[in-house]
Length: 396
Image 1: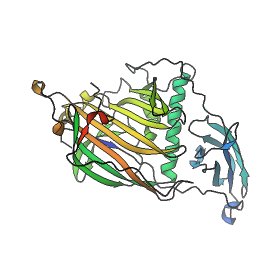
Image 2: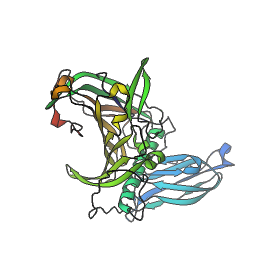
Image 3: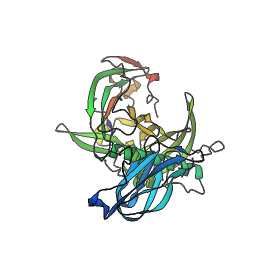
Image 4: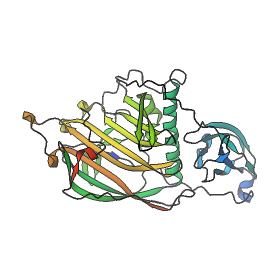
């Protein structure tokens, strides 16, 4: 990518390796070593009132740091839990979370079946209210703006599911990448490569620190690091952004709700504005459309950049489980002197990423160990219609 471009990095994988969730609780005998102090809890998470098993619900004991998925049939199992009373939190994308106080008995396995109610999101009569400024950031009040509050809550449920996925079922993927430039009508791809990417440790969101300098292959580079799904639901991120309802978008036969986000005015260094798109039928995250805030505060070597836009898309690998599918990002440059048009081969720097395969160490229940995605037909020197790129709308 040209030196005048700000590299856009998306952390596709976060979390550290954890222990896989067994599909069934094979026995209520916990073993001699743990009988004295530990027990187990199992059951089925169901959709009420139909009482159909809900796959990939998150069942957790927050005080102990225990988080597990229910299986593909809704069955969950928490093993080796310290005896005593604990708060149990059960969550599923698209459903109202529930909390329980459970008593774990030493040397015994208890059973608790749980019914969850679907979230009643009602947005048909809502008014679209674009956020022009963000003077009072934070999650909207649940009484004054219940629908927007619910969309933020749905985003947080997506983050919780993703965190459990990468923590308990670490995986790696193969990523195809293309770099080029966008002109007035076409984009020209200048270089193509691929990269095997392992899981990486989570990096916490820091307000106004989206643009940072890192060392890559011994060289210092300045990058824009796109927040991950988990970071979008981080308390610091929520406390430093305003949220509003942005309407709906019809994509194929699906309708997506749009949740607009704007960085707090008090942040004087670059952060992100943008929109989150949530599927109205499944409540799953489908797309992130982010722009760099305060481009005027970029380091001096990027004074020619007037905007940065990055669109991340997601694909569902199982009901309630989504991973990142691809990225389209553009550095929008200030016009050349004299008003000349930018040639496509040296135009606005473009970066494309596409996940073409993934592999789990141990897969979640009913998920294949290895999965593949369509390989993009990119070629060096290839001209691509600008209109075919999701991120090619100039934000100016």
